[in-house]
Length: 405
Image (cartoon, rainbow, N blue to C red; front, side, top):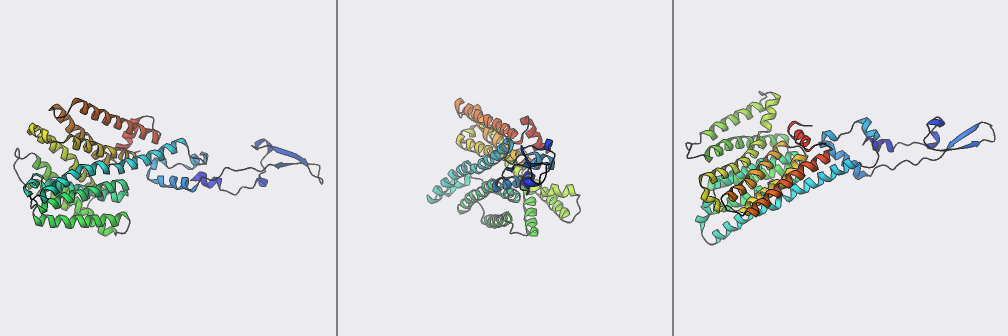
C-alpha cells in the first residue's frame, strides 16, 4: 500500500534540481541567449504506473495475516508490480479456499446413501430398519455441526460455513426420518427442530452482520453449555458396560459449564479465563467429532466381526472430506480447525481403513493406494504452505500454527 502512495505523488520533472552527479537520467547542455551560463534541462521522466485497483484491494485483504503487513521502509522498497512471493501467497490462498469448498462433495455423498436408504424403508413400511441408526449419536453430530457453524460464521470463513451448514441440514434430515419412524421420541425431535431452526437463522444473521452482539452472546452461551454437557457424557457412554451406565458425567459437566458461563458474563473471571470460556464451544465441537472415530475403533476392538459391516467407500470419503480442509486450516493458522480435520482424516478415515485391512476386509492394493495418496496430500500441503509464506522449512509452518508467528 505504501508503494501505491509513493508512485501516485505529483512529481514535476522540471522541478528536479539535484546536483548533476546525483541525477539518474541524462541531460542536454544548452546556453541561453540572455546568459552565458549553462543550464541543465532534464528530460521528462516517465514514472511507473500505479498498481491496479485489484492488486491494492488484494493487499488490503491480507490484514488477516499479520506477518505479511510490511513495514514502511520495506514497503517503500517494493516495486509497483507484485513480487513472486505475493503471487504464490495469493494463489495458495485461493486454492485452499477452493479445497475447503470442495469438501462439500464427499461429505454430502457420505450422508446421502443413509438418507436414501431410510426413505426407501419408510416408503416400504419397514420402520424397524431405522432403529439401527442411533438417534443420540446423530443428535451429537448435529450439535457439533451447529457449534462449528457458529465458530466459522464468526470468523467469516465462507467455505467452512457452507460445509457445516450442509452438515446440519443433512444430519437433521436423518433425524427427521428417525422421528417419522418413531425411533426418536417426538418431544426430543420438536426441541431439536427449534434449536436447529434458531441456530441456522442466528448464524445467517450474524454472518452478514445483522445480529446484535447481545443476542449472539446468548447463542454462544447456549452452545457452550450444550457442548460441555454432551461431550463427557458421550465419552463415558462409549465404555459402557465396562463402566456403570450413568448420566452423572453429563450432569456434573453441565453444572460446571453453567457456572463458568455465568461467572464469565458477570466479570468474575480473569481476562484469560473469559477468553477460555468463549473458545470452549468450538473446541467441544471439535472434540465431539474427534471422539467419534475413537468410539468406532473401540467398537472394532470389542467386536471384530462387525468390521465386515463397515463401508470402505464411506471411510475413504471421510478421509477425503476432512483432508481437503487441512490446507485451509493450516494456511489461516487455525489450530482448532487443523486439529479436528487432521485427526478425523487420520483416525476416522485412514485408521478405520487400517483396521479393515488388518482383518482382511479390504485388499492390500486398496489400502496402499489410500495410504500413498493420504501421505502425498499431507506432504504437498505443508510444502506449499511453506512456499506461500516464504518459510525455509515446512516445520516452521507447523510451529507457527501451534505457537503463533
